[in-house]
Length: 361
Ligand code: V47
Ligand code: SF4
Image (spheres, rainbow, N blue to C red):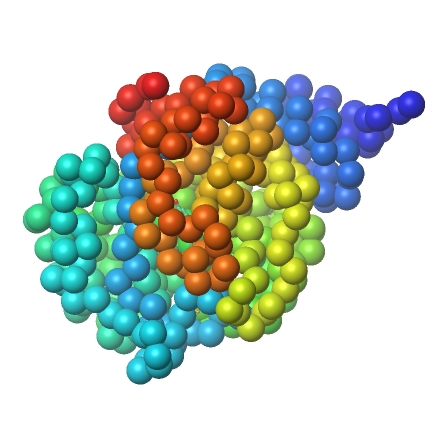
């Protein structure tokens, strides 16, 4: 019995010849049920790039405020100003949350928050300076391009001037959030207030020009079509051709609790397929991350065989996924991460935020 989808033969040949996949190829891959052939191909690409290494870091998240004046329909994290459960941490609250980080082996703080005039540069600049002064060895990975766009509007700054100020205050790199799906049709429906695709990409372009490494995400599994997922990746690939500044691509699986969109959750089949296609399509991205908090540690282990080479980190106190129903959004210890990588047949490599190797286990 024929088990290989014949349409994948041509695509396999292209990948093996080092030829770039077209958007049409990407759409074909999404329409194929042949996950094993797709996964095996993505795994070959992954092994050629990284061998059996699986990267992780020891980090914690800091979400200084959940107050947000935007209303993304997939978001369970945001609160209206003054609503029950709304918070904004003071600088002292943030310092207290991060106290003792070095003793716990933490090397990175991932800082993102809601969009509110109460958390503009007048709030964040002193916060970064205070964190940097108290913890000079901690890498501050902070602010999605959506937050940067908001700071620029509020303070009448260019993207460059805003990023320069934040770098001077201690910013070390930028996370990849806020990208969602670039297609205007989707943004108009699920996140119409936030910075659009062009501005998201423009901010990352400037960040790269200033020497900041950045990450890129895609929030999938809601109202987008396969073609819109592929086009999202194509736009990232084009910018990466220009700058080379992206470190990693992170597909984020939509979670459906406490948010107005109330869609279906993604299936493991779709998660693995999306990761494998990303590995094949984004030929100029070094790393592919399964954010285990969203995919679950169990699926993240399997994903290591479908193109993934990075499991993010220990992720202490992540709140965005938890708010939307993530059951694993707590804290995975370093030893637990090492054990689950080993059990999947890979070699745990602790990395810094910018992918320097810190230890191999
Ligand atoms: O921008 C919001 C997404 C992002 C939901 O750069 C949701 O290393 C799923 O960007 N279901 C924040 N996702 C998280 C993020 C991230 C996470 C880990 C590592 C990195 C990195 C970046 O989470 C938001 C949005 O795209 N999100 N609501 C939801 N219901
Ligand atoms: Fe606000 Fe971010 Fe939630 Fe959108 S995803 S509503 S910008 S906190």
